[in-house]
Length: 309
Ligand code: BDR
Ligand code: CA
Image (cartoon, rainbow, N blue to C red; front, side, top):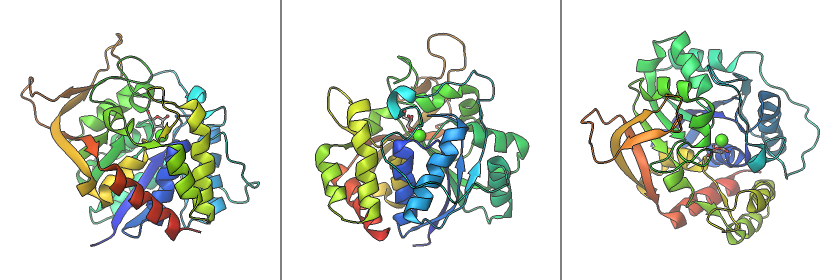
């Protein structure tokens, strides 16, 4: 199998950090770069958070700073879930590396324009950088191989009753991306809220006995308290599913349907409206994640962590 060439666009973030570890540790992925966006915390946090993970695990990848606010909306962060820094919990050494000079949006445009049309984008935060890249250089749209994103939901939201965080932060950006015509899959809360780092999973990863396993455990231990889902003390690793799908699609049950973003300013602002019963008879533009094989998923994550330092 040819390696999947991907750019990770993230707002690190506990689960974003694990997604980065999977992208670097999986042998079927070639990570071309990591671009950061404001989301879980401001860009002044998401960039250093990403750099901390890269430095701590000695990951061979460059980091680019992107947009520091949504295109239209006022900024919203998720400090209730991820803490003030966006990655509260693990303790890192002082940073000795820094982000590249090139802006993330320029990096995305340049990388895709110079490619053979084989680059996949994996956004795990608000879609600001991706939408800006599409507006800045519309020719990239036809050259993007695929978008595998975490965001939205088939049903309810986690930030408002209707909207999931990544989409709610920048609905106008999401609207641009979902209407772009690029082939895409969406891993939403209906799926990702079931992919939980339980205390047993955390112990299993710590047991690997290397830096990556310990970092997984330190990171996800924080979410045991901040992100209990349905009363369960366990943190969802939402973003990791978007990376996993690229190299192990057989682990996921997907369904193709029409999805659009509600950008009206009512109570459903930021909702991913999923036409699962094909009521609108519109083109099925998104492959939506419905379910996953949890055992296969955690085996994939464990193997990637074992491949790291
Ligand atoms: C998404 O929002 C963020 O808090 C997580 O990192 C994930 O990308 C889940 O709604
Ligand atoms: Ca994220």
